[in-house]
Length: 219
Image (tube, rainbow, N blue to C red; front, side, top):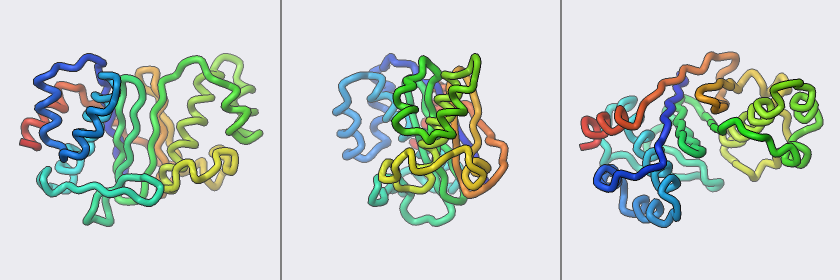
């Protein structure tokens, strides 16, 4: 079982709506959000947490007050009290994803833009660099394809950047079948799981849909 939820986030904050959604989070999480300098960063953090809660409630049929998150020693979040529900979230400018599975999972999203190829030279394998540079017209897209796949893989393993990025190749046959990459709205989304050769179902929720669900499920 794998599902991926995707929401585009506008940068503007509507104060009363923002405070209303904040009220559904623990005080400690609220404090973390208020420390962000930019409105979009505050909003991305808030809406990603709300999205995880909505999915958890819908999937496990539990109430918001019983949702408690923990983190492993490398910072990967997990839901306390369950062993067959895994999630992973990622956000970039103006977009959030949450991927869920009954097995460990990792996810990443990036918007396609001019690729910083110096990063590829430093952190990608020779094979991955060759894959990017061989493209005649899709160099930027291929860069973010590799980048999101590498991020999804290390988040799936649960050790984050404790695993050196050049130490594994996401194009190799022992890793590649576990990662699915899709494109939507000029964003690259990659998800890594224990499953192989799967199709990644993408559920798109607007901000207003999330807010309606929050009113129904979180209140």
